[in-house]
Picture 1 (cartoon, rainbow, N blue to C red):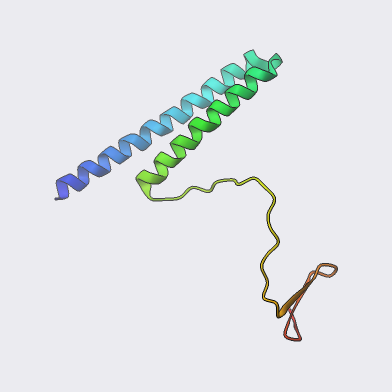
Picture 2: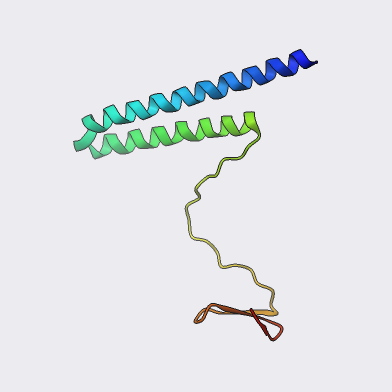
Length: 103
């Protein structure tokens, strides 16, 4: 049983190491291509999108292997916070009142 766990961990480490090497290679490629594509916005956008997709795939793989969730940036418009009807927020002075108590 211990041998199987050891092999599984070794395989996970090998995959994570491979992803790290891939990220280093991508950084080098980006540096080289940045010099070439200075004048081509379309190529730059396509390249950036392809690299973003590859990076997302690799991040998901690492999360699955390690069980550790990486922080992801979410874009969009946040909703207003939900407050109990007994709470009132005053945006002018950024204070919160709860049942007559001022926080």
